[in-house]
Amino acid sequence: MKKITTKGLIKYLLMLALAGLLLYFAFRNISWDDFVTGLKSCNFRWILLSMIIAWIVVILRGLRWRLMMRPLSKEVTRLEAYDTYNICYLANLALPRSGEVVRCGLIANSGKVTFEGALGTVVLERIWDLMCVVIVTLPLFFFGKFKDFLIEKMWYPMVESLPFGAVWLLVGIILSIVVLVLLFRAYRKKFAATRFGSKFINLWKGLTDGIKAGFRMEHKWLFFGYTALIWIGYWAMSLFTLYAFPASAALSIWDALFLMVVGSLGWIVPVQGGFGAYHFIVSMTLVPVYGFTQSDGLIFATISHESQVVQMLVFGIISLITYAIYSKKYKKAVIEPENVNNKG
Image 1 (spheres, helix red, strand yellow):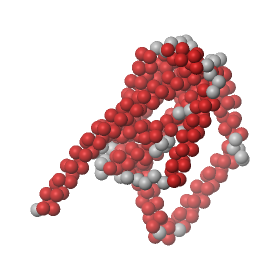
Image 2 (cartoon, rainbow, N blue to C red):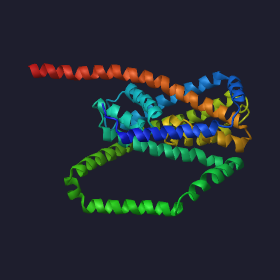
Image 3 (cartoon, helix red, strand yellow):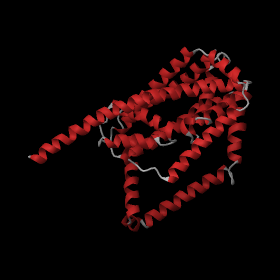
């Protein structure tokens, strides 16, 4: 078992404190009577349907990831890809951004794909997801209220917060990458001779192999089909949550798309399971854009977030149990023949 370091514990507690602080700012001025009454008025059948869609999305994500890993190994099963994805989400509820490392480690534990190779496919997967966020955001700029909010409340503050502006930041990143590549090419042999350099080069090779595998995958049309269904699923989840709450039931599919994009920012903030960040961002969006009260904004954010968290917890625990069972059987099947051969 990996030893918990003081640095790791402090980092975990700081992220937990940030989540608590964001929850405090989100809920500090609401009327709890109105909040509870609003929750009771929700149609939980729509929320249940949203949770079912969320589960289907995880299945699709597992199938897509398996497809990306097939050039590295055709032995990874659908169940392994699905279970490790569920466990990934479960890990993120405990420690932000840990899930990707956990699922790569679990796949590598089977001996079918190296950790570095699996991580390379995850990097490529996240690049595709980022591109999808950009693609689904573009139509919103054709609607005045969405365009104004995205530019004035999100883009401008983000750019203004940068010390030298977005352009200079981009230039600095590109120049830094160029310098690092040139230095690496010039001193590669000396660097590779060191212990750290050897490990880094092996990690880099595994990552690039994983990324290349993503481009070599069979049935690319199936990859794009899975991707489209995943994002349609997210859109449907947002829409069904709108239908669940009387104050938002009359909003359109474009409103659902807008709130899906805004909500995704809440999951990006490095806090446990998006707690606090999701509630704060979504509720603070609903108030100025739609004229919601703070209580109504938080009710929507709560049913949207907590329904996903419950789904992650339930299926994450189930997958943790099933993974433990078949991974134990797999190890037994591998170890027993080795023992027989050694005796012989």
